Image (cartoon, rainbow, N blue to C red; front, side):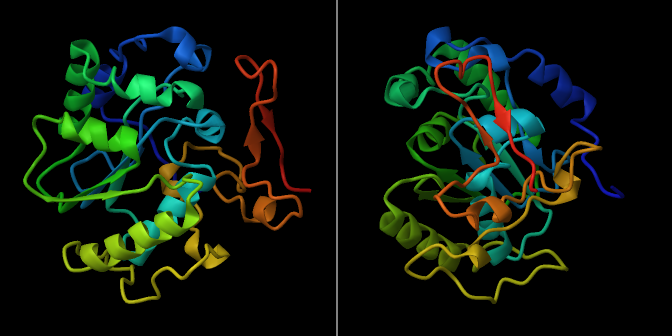
Length: 255
């Protein structure tokens, strides 16, 4: 526990507190509240990763991209040699019901939503930024609507939870090759390792660093390797049980 995320700086905390309600509450897991970010908010991020919306593990952690998808993203960042110089945000701060995702993509442009989100994107990035990676159609639309986006490399790739694994790996493989020529690795990172093969392997995942999580988070939060190794195809330690997924989460600890 020597490293942990102390939370956002005052200006961003104030902006986070002003998050507008979703345009259609029933299209979101609204009662669980918003989740805002993971990573550096001090302007030192060289890569901004934008994804879609938080999942159940993100709600437990209070940080973005922490579950299986987030651990894939951490592996992606590791292939760029980044161990800390990144920030992860989402198109929506509230979790979207998958059946409503396409409809909610069209609501990203609503003035209150776009104004707040663009202000977050502006304030969470700084002069060190070298690339923006938009993962999935929701993120790509949110970035398209970012009026203040700096003139840095923009890479659009499939979302880490895409069910089209071949397209996902093709897109991420090409993105890593491209970004290695643009993004400066951290001093303790390595951007010369292997890229992606034809299937995801455990080596393509990365555990979420303790510096990205709140103080006191259990050691296994952000590292679901033990879940992926369990027969049955489970990927996350946190799930939404039906039919009360609006008010119940189930979180399993390793035995």
